[in-house]
Amino acid sequence: MPVLDPLSFECISHGEEQTQRLGLRLGVLLTAHAVIALTGPLGAGKTQFARGVGQGWGALQGLRSPTFTMVQEHHRARDGQSLYHVDLYRVEHEADLRTLGLEEILDDEESVCIIEWADHAGTLIPQDAINLHLEIHNQSKRLLTFSTHSPTTWQVLLAFRKKAFGV
Picture 1 (cartoon, rainbow, N blue to C red):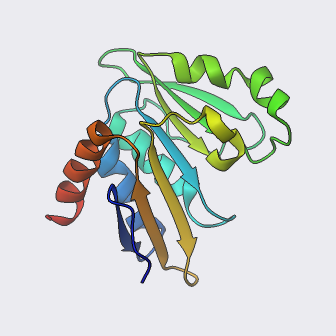
Picture 2: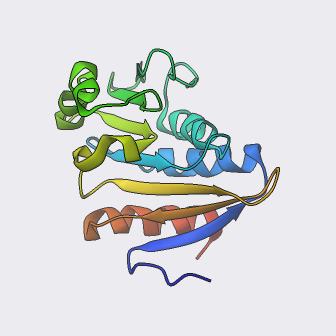
């Protein structure tokens, strides 16, 4: 078992539905300017988790993989706040990030942002992001490692852990 960073924890998901439910439980806790940085191989469950986050956050439409559009903007009825769902799978160069407007999205203090393939964004991911790495163990089992570099964001992750697992 790896030694975890002080501001991290792991859990196991036993299927797509559970991965989505975990996302939902985190989504209800998100406030403006939250960033979720998702990493992991193809098929690890990044989009499933993002769908759950969107549902818990209150997106009016279900989140779909934005692989071809790269950025999808969602809204919620109660306050009109925006959630950006970004997929950087096809990004090959830093210049591509500029054309997407990722810096502007991350600077938007009123929105929430979920980034799939966040490792392609390099240093643009803010220090207070919620980082989630998904690892495939078998066809249905995934290891999820949640982490942050921010004590403030760590409090959100602790609230999520309590909501999801009771601890």
